[in-house]
View 1: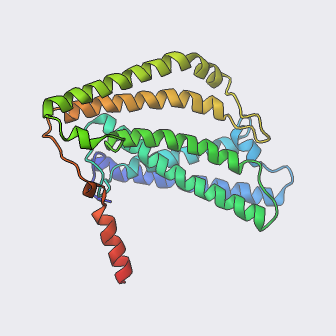
View 2: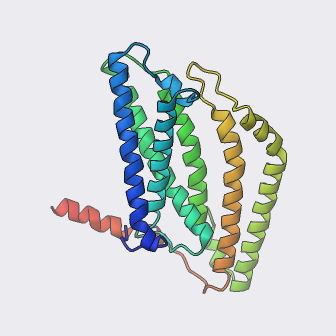
View 3: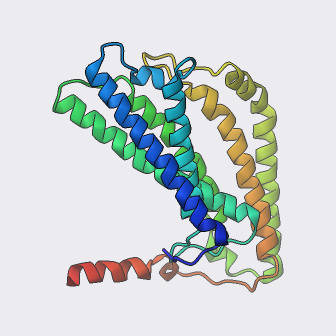
Length: 268
């Protein structure tokens, strides 16, 4: 990634230090929880981690972990990948932050599934929570990925037809696409708001042994993130309105930077 600051500027170092502080606190609290589990029978379990009420250590662990993930997302959004588009405005930055958040979440899924495999096949002690936690995280990854795809203009578009149009017709097609997206968002929010609010207010759970509040968090998240996707689409239209027409080819999908890295790896 390009190490040059995109938007944090002089705040980049304080954000990094805050991220390291939250991450350090989360690691220390996790070590304490592991030691407590080894030494005491009434130790805090994974079942308690989504029920922090009355448990200061659990609450502190969740706050530290959430702070570390959020600050890491902000810090890493300040650098741009070789094939990423330059951010243009506030909503592009928000989409970059959520994209880094989804990348971190993917790493968490890998760690959770690794833990489950080792626990199940090495120690013959399968967990009750690994599969559900992976589903929970993956739901947010899927939603944030859509927002990032919109910001990067990497969503599906039939360029074979689009490139043949004159610029005024391309703009017309972009406006029509945005109107359809606005209609879809309005219909989704109109039809799903009451149900999402009801599930969120009572934190509806999954109905399993671990019983995480997956419906109570994902239902409202769908509406919130589709709104962010739509706002990002409006931002894209405004930002691209006066740009010169682009012509696309299959070669645009080739990541030359990644190919160079592979060649260097093979050469070494």
